[in-house]
Amino acid sequence: MSQMPKQFISVSSQEEALAQLDAHGEELQILAGGTDLMVQLQQSGQRAQRLLHIENIPGLRNITCNGVTGIGALCTHRQIAESTSLDNYRSLRQAAAQVGGWQTQMVGTIGGNVVNASPAADTLPPLLIHNARVTLVSQSGGSRAVELGRFLLGRRQTDRRHDELVSGITLARRPERGRDCYIKVGRRSATEVAIVGLAACVTPGRDGRTLEDVRLAICSVCPMPKRLYEVEHLMQGEEISEALLEEAGEIMLKHIDPIDDVRASKRYRSMVAPRVLKHAIACCIENVSGDLRPWN
Image (cartoon, rainbow, N blue to C red; front, side, top):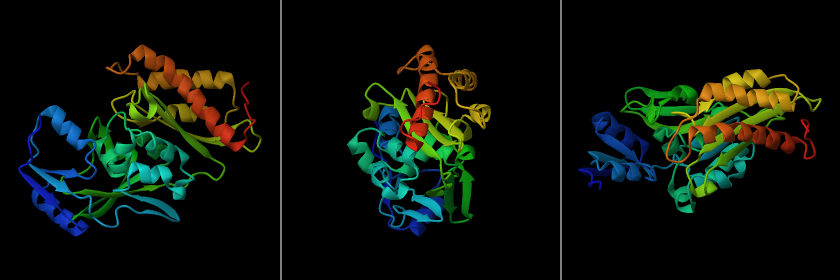
């Protein structure tokens, strides 16, 4: 079992948090909702040197849509799932609604999900397809923004420096005719860690048969969530067909090399992932035109 931390520090402003990080960054573990951190401490049996509680910092729970869509780091998954301000980011709302159960969604935060960098983090594929940028602030360095794909370095590894605080995430504007979705496969869907999670954003051509733009990202099959750029390039500008989708699934498997773990075997993931890809593309197309099934 985990032991109590040597020191519990609660701050009520960003300035206070940055001062603590500047002074004790290497010893501090940041605590907001705690849905990931407390489990990790309990499982590892380690003792946190100091916990920096940031949940009471005002201004980090806002969702703004002034030209650029911004999500504060302390926005909870339930807040995101229910936000009509994020109607153009359906995949993110769907993913947030499937992060654990209601208890987790009510207290778990988007910032925590990003910084935790779990290979199975539901919100990361939607953020990746919407070209999310992570905003980090520090007392000495000010503010910097990093593309999420560059921010994620590996399993539970990120580009956050010890003296930095993730203050928010910005999203690129979704293509006007684009539609997006998040598909999760798990034993009990919302309450279970994903076996395969895939986000897609598809913009069909005006002829209804070609793919003008395709963005894809996957989680829970690799050491870290990732964009499927090779599959995107294959499908871009092509006419939708069963043959194209089959080829896309084959290309995807070559570049993700599915893992074996306690939740599912490599063989199972290799069978499921191409089907999830096909289903996600279908969902996006059907959101544009309900009766459009061009590869049938």
